[in-house]
Every structure is written in C-alpha cells, then in structure tokens.
Amino acid sequence: MKLIRLLLLIAIAGAPVSPLLAEQVTSDVLLAQVYQRGIDVRKFLVSEKFDGVRAVWDGKIFHTRSGRVIAAPAWFTQGFPATPLDGELWLARGKFEALSGAVRKNVPIDEEWRGISYLIFELPNEQGTFQVRAQRIVEIVKQANIPHLKAVTQFRVKDETVLNSRLKQVVALGGEGLMLHRADAQYVTGRSDALLKLKLQNDAEATVVAHTPGRGKYTGKLGALVVETPEGIRFKLGTGLSDAQRENPPKIGSLVTYTYRDKTASGKPRFASFLRVRHE
Image 1: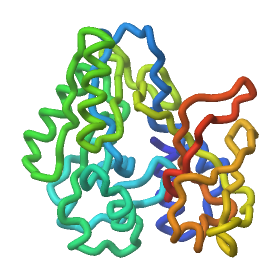
Image 2: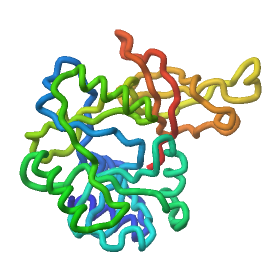
Image 3: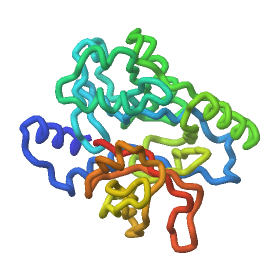
C-alpha cells in the first residue's frame, strides 16, 4: 500500500509516473486466474462478475488498480469507512460505457453518478480467511448504512453442475460471469489461483500496434486492429468493432479487451472479438 500512496501523491502533484512504478502498483491488488474444470468448487465462495470499473478505496479517495485517482463527487463518498476497500464501481448490467464515461472525468458530474454503486468484494491487507473477510464486509456495509455502498453477495455451490447452472442464469440476465474465491485464502496480491473467473467466453487484453485498411463496405475505414499480447503474440482483431470505432479506431498504443473461445497450439486466440478499449 505504500507504493499506492506514493503514486497518489505524485498524481496529485501532477508529476509523471514511471512505467515501472505503475507496474508495481498494478500488482498490489488481487487478480484472477481463469477457472479450469475439475476444481473442487466446494472450497470456494462464488459471486457474480460485475462489468464495472475496479476501484480501490484507501480510506479517503478512490483509485484504479494502476493508481489513477478516480474523482468521485463528495456526496458519493460521504460517510465511507476509513477502512481500505476493494471493489467495483457499477451502474447496471450492459451499462459499462456509460459508467466508464462517468468515472473517467476529472470533474465528476453529479447526475452521471446517480445510480452508480460501489460493490465491495475484498478488504486489502485484512487478516483472516476470505470467508472471515467477506463477513466483515457485510458488517462494514451495514454499519455505514449508505444505499450505494454494497457488499457483493457470496454463495456456495455443491458441484460444477450447479456452478454452470448459476453461470447460465447470470449470463441470461445480462451478466458477465462468475468469480470464485477460495474461502480459506489469506489476503494476497498479484495474479493468484485464490481467485478464479468463469465466463462462457474467455477474455484478455492486448495492445494495439497497427491498423489495417478495410475493404468492401469498410473501404476508407478500419478493417482490423493488429494487437500484441503481453506474451508477444500478434494477431488481427477485426470482429466486434462498431461503425463508429471503424471511423475513429482505438489509437496505436491503446490497451483493448477482447473475447475468445480457446487458443491454438501456438497461443493465438480462436474466434477473437473486440470488446472495448480499457481506460485506466
């Protein structure tokens, strides 16, 4: 948490942040692995995977996992606990773009924040198992008594059949997927199998390195993005883009999220489709 505080001081002062420092801060939160079949799901607490903006509350302000300060209206955080919290700023299923537009503004617009909730799923650096921390989150929310401050509902499933049934229910309602957190896990940071994500489709991030021109009805517009994964694998991302995005494509250097079904033997994603530009 010391690195996060240092980054916040730098950001507030307006000084540039080094890529190395940003990467160190990024690893200071818990990040999920992809769920694999055959895991004993009885050892996990399960919750919905919300399509929101990850936000860490340090007791005074919000910031993203990369350290960028999120400017929330004063009324939104009034009465928030001094306890550090980790969660999602969330508007509603299928409303990510509206949410992202609201929370990215340096000067928040009150009306855009109406309806946004802060959904808490973790207590940074808190002692005890996740099951204990999850109960503590419920107690914190109850004590604060703020309508838009909410504890993410955690539940158990007895087997993979029930897990997959719950996944289909959530997706049918417009949800993104499920998260599984080891009930006996102590608090950790970085990419860990203590936290797993389960979706009907996988997703990942890649950097835009080039644009290819369109043909036919897309003549004069973007045909596809050439992207590169953190592992150095390059491929074209041509589906999932709107007409507006083909007219004004994500800039080279942008980080984008894409979905895919599985991977080839060489590591390239199959049936990859553009999802969104990641703004952080």
